[in-house]
Structure formats: C-alpha cells, structure tokens
Image (cartoon, rainbow, N blue to C red; front, side, top):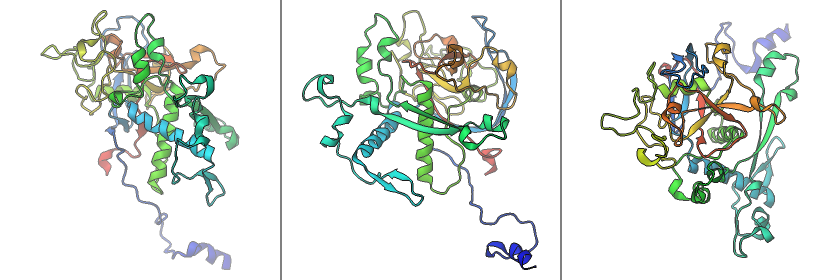
Length: 402
C-alpha cells in the first residue's frame, strides 16, 4: 500500500486524479531564424511548366503536398561562409594551444573565452613553411588543416532495422571546409579567370556574393555547423530540427513563390520585363554574359525577389539540394513531402553520387533557370557556378497557429 501511495505522489507533486499531462514542459512560441523566409504548407504540381526542349522526360508532372519550412532568402554568401571557416580555423588553433576545459559530464571542450594570437610561434604549423612559401615574409594559411568532423543518425536505417543498436546508426564524416577557389580556372579551358581564383572568396568586394567551389558534403557540413551554433546560443530552448539543404520539391515550391504553373519565379513566361530588362543573372545569348548586369555572379540579393521574398531562385548560382538524382524519381516518390535520399560512399558507382541541383546559374541558358527544370552534379564535384542555401523544417501546422 505504501508503494502505491509513493507512486501516486511521485516527484512531490500533488495528484488530483485528472489527466492533465506533464505540467513542467517548456513553452514553445515558434522561431523565426535571421535571414530566413517562411514558406507555408501547400500543394503544387511539380514538373516542367514550359516546353521540355531537350525531351528529357525527367520532370513529369505530379501533384504533391509540401509542409511548411524556412529557407534562406539568399544563397549563402562568401562572408557568411567565411564565418564558418574562421570558426574552424580558431578551433584548430585552440587545439594546438591546448585550450581545453572539462565540462560537468567529463567531456573535453574548447575554451572559447581564451584569446588567440596568430603571430605566436606555436601556431606557425598552421601556415606554409620552408619551400612551400613564396617569400620569407609570406605567412599564408595552409587550408588543408581546416577540417570539420560531425556525426548524424541514419533515421531510415533505424526505421527499417528495429533491432539495430544505436552505434550502428551513427555516421561520421570529416570534410575540409575551405572552398575550392581553383574552380574558376578549372571550369573554363583557355580562359583568363585567375583574378577570380585569387580574390573571389577572400576579397571584401565579394563578401555579399554567393559562395562557390563547395561540394555537396561541404554544404552538408556547413548546415551541421550552423545547427551547432544555433543550439549553443539558444540554451534550453527546444529545437530538435536541424539546418539542412532543401529537398528538390521544397526548392521548387519555394521558387514558384505561390504561382502554380509559371516557369520563372517572377511569374511570367519571359526572361525580360516590359522595358526589356533581364530579370535574372544567366547567359542570355551566345558569348553574351554581361547583358544582365553581371559578368560572373552578382550579389546574392540582386534583382527582385519572388512573392515569398526569395532572391535569385533563378540564375546567379545553381543550388545543391538534399535529393539524390534519379531520372524517373517522380514516378517513385510519395506525394507527401517527396524526396529521394542516398548518401553515396566513395566506392559507389558514379551514378549513385548524383545530386539534384536547381535554378541554373550565371553561365547557363534560361532553360535551366526555369523552376521546373531538373539538373544534377556529382556530390564530390566543385564548380564556380554551384552554391547553396539552407532550409529548416517548421514545427507545427502553420505559422498562423501562433
């Protein structure tokens, strides 16, 4: 009898016999991350909204539903990505200096309160030395040391393998975070683009331009770091969702801006407005790059946004999505938040490493800028015309609920 009374009065709380739920739950008023736009739940018909000029039949029409989510209003810029690079650089320096402390659980963590002096001899190993230097006075960072390691859970494996232990569900990856600045030379044979290689990611003139030279694993690692930064600053605020790349269908839903069948984010069927001005940064004619106002990329918030407030969903840089590319994917995917995932391994066939990119770029013709046009690139490939933006799942039915 004493045991029963103990259970009924557990945790020292007075029990009334009523079903009232746990009363000490944290409050939740939603969130609105800086630099992101809320895209509401809705239905749409994905697929080519204009002529499939190449007769690819890889974007057959299909009616689907998408749940609400946040997405960056611009592509991730060089300066935003540089914040990540500097964080990794500082973590390497702190590790060399031994700037660690032990938390209450016995975990060794970096003491970010300690200041760094990069002129110290102890940090010379982070820079090119000996015959790697151009001159005796040069102090150039060896970017090969800038690596970010992270873990994630394979939820699909967990769902289909109920008896598997948790350690078998964990995946780990280590990636170099520095952009591949040599893409500006590698992508274009017999073309003088060395100034872009030397300056695009480093020079402040390009701070607000979209970062390029990022492969799919690097984009995924950035999303993980962004989640880590968010959670470390929000304390006990509950948020189980992570920043991630948008799925292919989320990207298309966001790009359309609430317009059902318009082939471009601005709603029209044409790439020029009534005054004859081009509406995106792409290649409007053979050998003609600068007519739209940008020779290479342009600022991430250039041109007018679509009706959701999203900039450059067409043109500027093509964008990585979460989705693995399969030519006939629309026939296999569910009609509720459709997506096809596959995290290809190094020894997988090349065809398994294809990831969907969307939106077209500064060097593409307008066909690739259409909201319904599918395209792909290998996940371990870097290009001067591919960037990304992040998404974040919205928790709840609609933002209007709050």
